[in-house]
Length: 290
Image (cartoon, rainbow, N blue to C red):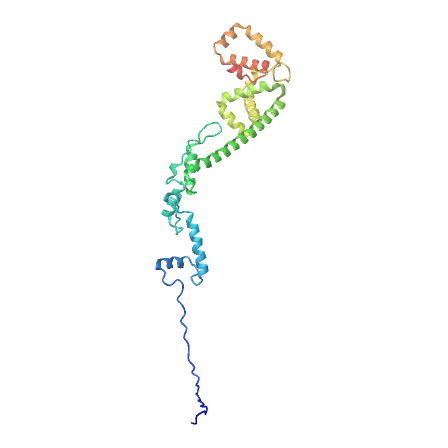
């Protein structure tokens, strides 16, 4: 080649096609201690989402801070199994539920009149309180509420019974009129002869009614002849007037033989004097009997 000539070089370029392999980075939780990883998995934290998993971990940490430093006796662990009787018994025991029903104490619970609750009632309610898992220190409060209700119910019943008795007495007074005291005397004498105690009479009043009961004893007394002690002389009256009774009493008090019989406890003489006093004073003779 002559000096000054320009040299030209030609290069063949061939294209080479190759495959590039990219290796994915390991999961972010790879390398964690198995216990920590297992805890996260048991909590169902989203391990495929680092942000979500981190959020759940922070929430758990903040919740745990409430118990940091708390003594064991202030912590309560609930059984996982609902059928774990021993576990739940321990839980309720920590909440104050006694081990046995007999541990419930109701000695401080009283009725309005100051009387204690009946033993039968206490024995019946103790098992119910235990089955309901009522703490020992709250059981008396529950029973006191029941007793208060019972007191109120008794008061209402007494008020209704008293009002009803007043109505029945008023009806009897209207029906017997001026003969009320004498008729009551006849009725009371019949009850005594039949051996009916005042307690039984009171019980019967609540069943048949005061007015009907007195009418019944009055009829029995008349059939037994008790009305002879209060019978007057006025035709059709059937009962002495107050004046007749006073005259008869004066007559008897002047009869020395009768006075001796009366003071000696003669039943007939004393019954007659009581009947006369009933008519004179207008009561049923109970004060004279006493």
